[in-house]
Length: 159
Image (cartoon, rainbow, N blue to C red; front, side):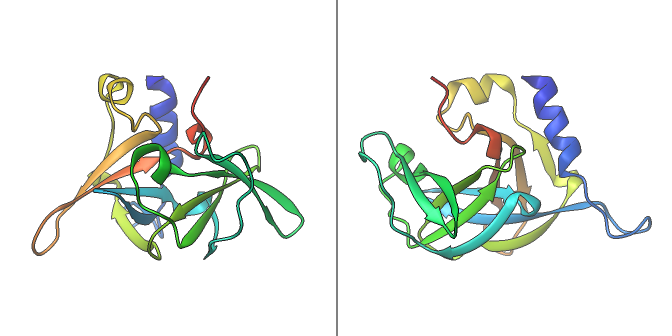
């Protein structure tokens, strides 16, 4: 698991030029009382919420995006009681679409790689946020922002 997290950090690297500070663009969104993010290159599109089909019992549904099917991962139902008004459509390495309903339009942030750290395995296995691989602490005027970076390939609960 640690090698996978380090590999994911390698995937997070992005720079504009050799002289520029290396950074990662993140699509940041609130979910309950925490802040989550996806690497911007994993985000296919942000759109208004679409109809979701399924039993509604396990926090996973099915939706259509054009001529493609996508799995809707209702993180708010798994962790919180927040309803989604918008949909972040992410694409994993296998080019499968996943939708994450969110209450507000997400924010695009450029975060220096020096602020992004791998989450420890002990935390990941003990917390509900096992789908997060990294965390970053971003200084802000009033309160620093702690953002958990999600791994699109781990959005569905393992059975």
